[in-house]
Image 1 (cartoon, rainbow, N blue to C red):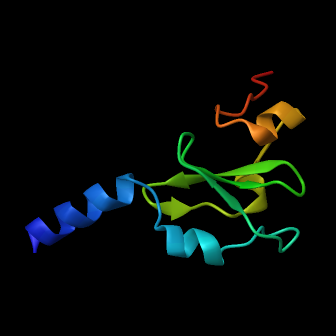
Image 2: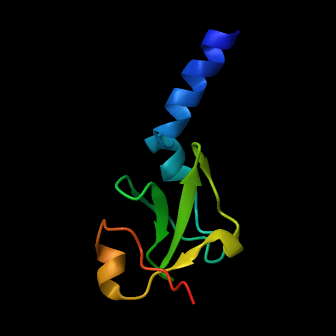
Length: 85
């Protein structure tokens, strides 16, 4: 049992499966999401929001989304800029 859970945790850290990413949609617009493997997030191009994937679980709650600041953030694989103030 312990070995199996260790394997599950390792695979969860890698992100979500591409098949699951194809099925998921933005909770606000119901439009498809784009997987960004570099930032380990799902991006809604229609409204410019990035939803994080934590321990292999997509956080699709609107309050967990990060608003991307510019069109460059939408097209880039770099992490989104956040305001700390």
